[in-house]
Image 1: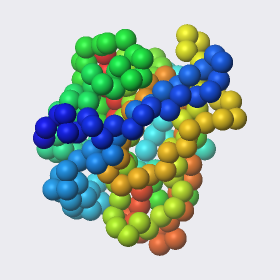
Image 2: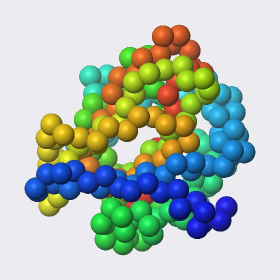
Image 3: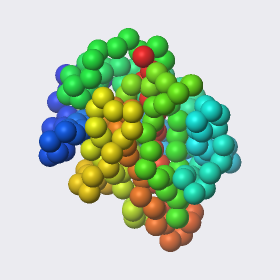
Length: 219
């Protein structure tokens, strides 16, 4: 794909109007071309039985189930789509880093997973960086997709103003809300506080779920 054509679809990043907390994001529409999108959707539907319950990473760096914090399912093996996303993400990286005001960093590796949220699923406010295996996460991405017609509502991604240079994130009343838009991707710093609002999927059918390919670029 021609990089200049892809990058031209970038929306202006959002800046929180808070004296001490400006949290930029970068949003791109039509992240995948039609054939890639259809192939990803077909792949997802064919792997239904391979999704497992998500977990959270504790202060000790170990994963554990915690439905008070997070409820969804995940697929870790993306086959050839992992490399496709890595290549596309690296195409976007220079512009994203500049727009987010992040220092340039050498990417050591990219984590990517396919997440399914269905009726009543959510992820409470959290950041993606910390200690242990997540200590070198620099950039978070979330790519939205779903079957048409859309079989769910809710599942908004809320991104909160987060103070830089602080050991903890702060969440004032004002935040940016991103609705799950077909074939759209959002980037933000992994230190930013964010959450996924509850999904409403009346059928509770896997095929009608809110899907994302989401992950992190490590320094």
